Image 1 (cartoon, each protein chain N blue to C red):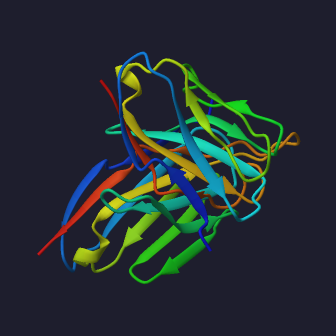
Image 2 (spheres, rainbow over the protein chains, first blue to last red):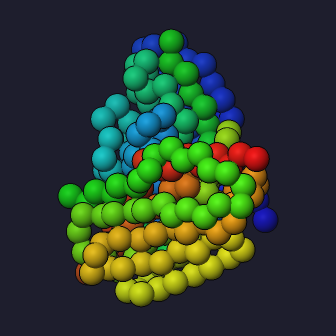
Length: 113
Length: 114
């Protein structure tokens, strides 16, 4: 079982460019999440979705957008990247909204120059 | 606003020693989670604690939850090098409209040295 697949694994992006980080899960989990991890700050929630067709804002949503057209996919888009968005991005899923343990993808290392 | 604080943030301990990592949170919740992250890797679930007084153990790690004190502990017994990692606690809250997403602490970076 693949679990959660994130792509790309890493990316260098010029400031001002747009990019979409992909996340796909095959566990039929209802809830999906995007976190960013920065040294000394732990994991901070960007956006989440409790079920297909719905999304919500997390702690640090500015500069990011998400969509949840179906159960399996939860892409994260940076419309116009800035250097402060340099981070490691983790996608995660859980069976129900906010409950039980999260399953994490392997992460995307993004550098915005 | 739910806040989660861990301490210490950095911990260097000798093999064979015992130590405890603490996780405090700011609002009432009966649900707490511990994760482990190895360098350059993703997070893996260690423990799920879903009630006051819950205690779970696996190997040299034992986690407990005191919801009245809003405190969870992760106790390490007779540390070995393989336990070197960053440990995160996380909390969510049950709501009628749907449970809230997990809020994570900043993590405790543990190094076990010979």
